[in-house]
Image 1 (cartoon, one colour):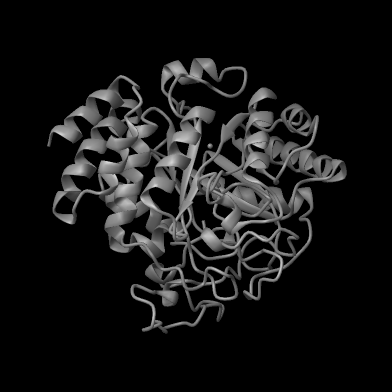
Image 2 (tube, rainbow, N blue to C red):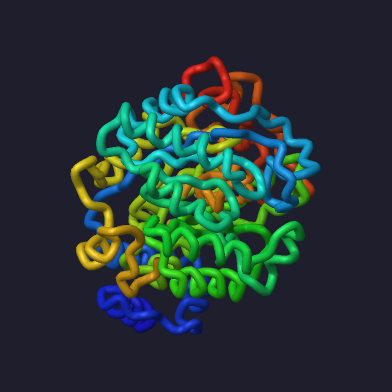
Amino acid sequence: MDLLNTLVDKGLRRELPTREEALAVLATSDDELLDVVAAAGRVRRHWFGRRVKLNYLVNLKSGLCPEDCSYCSQRLGSTAGILKYTWLKPDEASQAAAAGIAGGAKRVCLVASGRGPTDRDVDRVSKTIEAIKEDNEGVEVCACLGLLSDGQAERLRAAGADAYNHNLNTSESTYGEITTTHTYADRVDTVRRAHEAGLSACSGLIAGMGESDEDLVDVVFSLRELDPDSVPVNFLIPFEGTPLAKEWNLTPQRALRILAMVRFVCPDVEVRLAGGREVHLRTLQPLALHLANSIFLGDYLTSEGQAGKADLEMIADAGFEVEGAGTTTLPEHRADAAAGGCGTGGGCGSGSGSGSGGVCGTSEGDGNAAAGAAAAGTAGAAGAAVDAGAVDASVPGARPDLVAVRRRGAGTDLAPNA
């Protein structure tokens, strides 16, 4: 296919595709899907080989957020039955992080719900970062705390933070339809603050909120312009108790096409497969490893994910390898640019993993953008399944049986899933 050959050539040169080419990737048919994956896989392997970076989320403060992001289980007015607790102590957060690091995670993503941190919150998180780094030599720490004020990014950097996550989530033109308590411009400003402070910027999107192909291309092109080092791709989990509970718009094939488009637009950037992969990709998850070079290990912020052991087996069975602690994730040209902070290597530009930060929409796996664990047989472990076993026949493609609220790990007395 001429389109795919052109996109591969551009990806190997770090050349920006046209909007028409990006839209054409999303418009390919299911019959062409394996060709699309193979082409984007060539670009992924050129810049990242067969390495998969593992990231681990620690939810420092869960629920009770004053923002109204429609996708988020922690939002103002949410009736989702998620865990709610205030700040973990530094030693508690360090213990939670240690579980993910023991499972092979190179990066720990510290996430807290809320509009943004107070100066006291920054002090608290700084102590947590110091505790994690003291206990785990060489680990990367990414903070995801929401909108940043003057000087806060610099203070996090001084405390030892390596990166900051804040997602754009969707296009500027539709952002007001999913959130009214802050703006798209607020999010862009926070990514820039992190970048200017010398933090590696992490910013991504959430797909499946009813957006158009044009919206998806818009947000990915905006991300390339911002140039974060890491781009998490979340797939909406329609949590019961949130305004988007009935938005089941994704198939495994569409999710793969979205990931391929992101890889073509952001060829040399850490593309992270984030929340919702288990629910929407399901048995096609291994194919996504040909597109993304980074995933979250185990559970997310407010929902359960695939068991950590299953993640590791999936990576090995698909012919990939876990990226070692001594390996530099980014290609040399980006790593050199990022040596003093965030890289700008001319490509696209970053989780938690998460997910866009304390203003709950995190690439780092926001509770609403996080995946269920039914595939790993854990959905009923603590009686936490959301409508367990029920499929809403009134909504085509709905799989609420695959969504499970997290009831273990941070904020509980139960061992984490890592």
